[in-house]
Length: 239
Image (cartoon, rainbow, N blue to C red; front, side):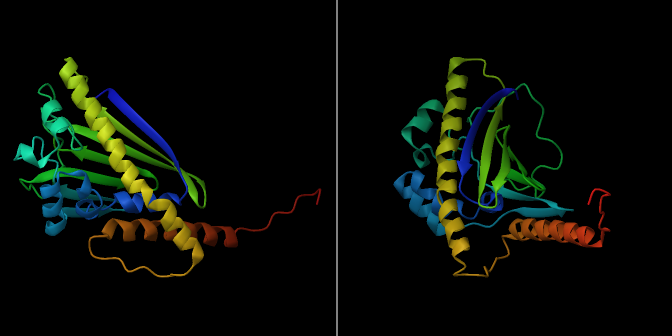
């Protein structure tokens, strides 16, 4: 999958906030549903969300989600440009036929409505494998305590026709628009945290990976502080 599209953005928030936003999918029916056609938007907001599976391995984790139907069950569910170009947020509808099946370990629940698996690799990398046989990577590069650089990269099988190329480009620009929606809340969240008006945040059972990320980060910091405090003070002869 060497056909690559990449986006980069400087974000005015701590790097962990963007991982928090992407490490769960329950926000999608509310935050992103307004991008769907009106009837589908109302339906999605009423359905809600529950993930298919979770897993934790050391400081890393994954979540498996339904969705990603390409093509959709009903073409009326999506916008006209998606119907014409046979593509959208979940990728091109026509899956590449010259690559193997999805790798072992994907869709651990073996759910028929499975759409995407998201792997959070501590500390700052994510890999998303989509049912239509393409994938995304996310990098979060801290630049200060309240800023970071985000990179989102899409990987496809190289197109063989102009129509396949345009389908991939529609998927790429659609991803950008949805990522802007995800990122739009982050700087406000950062300002809220820095105000200290609220000091504790309840996390629900679907926020397993958020809880695990912050515990892993705290454990790493605590381990560093312990080793720093236990190390002998070295004074040079010049001192």
